[in-house]
Length: 393
Ligand code: PLP
Image (cartoon, rainbow, N blue to C red; front, side, top):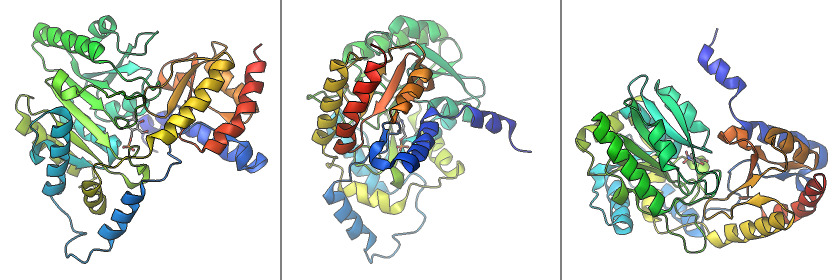
């Protein structure tokens, strides 16, 4: 009676959602303070005060026309401000024409993929990956192709990438700072990736787009600044959102920025604007556009995440867990004591610890912890992790 494809996707959709539901059950039995839910990337930190105050100001404006339809790309003045900010950060020459406002990074990715994909064309995704990429690619009859990252660094492996590219490759999605590993890709590796792409474009006479999914670009630690994608890749498209940087995931606001150096960029922009409309988003929320245009210099207090990262990471390493110290995001990717990560997550659940198996990110043998929870949850969870580790001694 319903779509066969969607019905089958329902059965193996998301470990993250499953864990979230398990959490609800455990909270009902044990009480919320006895459940250590590290499953979902839903920030516990509140948006910065200036963001809240500006939202009140914008929402209570008497200016007529504040709530009407607008250009499908979004307000030109908002897009100009984002272009100016990106120019400052990347040394680029973007104008408002190169920016399309979207309902978060998720919508941005869908708009980009619909705009570039023909049925059967391939999109390379590095594992471990954000699982929604696979659904988004399939939404437009594209074919996801998985390229494993380097096992030691979790950065793209240029050789494995080269092997994954063929005449049908249309795009590569990169995500740095990375969900789930917390790794920030180095400019050395990104330049190697760029060389591979250039060679393959020449070999096949094709254009391979680099879609850079950057919702965590402002959440980095220890002074790390992610390299500028526009400088490294000619055919690059950045998708970004304010879900994590301003802790506004429920408000659905983000944007697409296209590299002016893409051939026939005007047609690409036309496709993006049309897709924003015909996918049913029509335009990004008006109030949110006006809000973020006034708070582009704001970000959540990264030190709060850093404190959480440090307490958890130091404790876990002391207990014998293997893990790379996250350079960005609010995720830790732990090697499990046993190869079966799903079984490991089940054992953790007995200690009221909710983790997402790496299998859900195309990377068995690991679990992801999302540490955008309260400091109290982290502190309360430490004995539970000790008990979990003791099971494997
Ligand atoms: N990309 C990655 C890697 C994410 O982790 C998320 C959300 O968790 C998204 C995209 C979607 O973000 P948004 O809320 O902006 O749609």
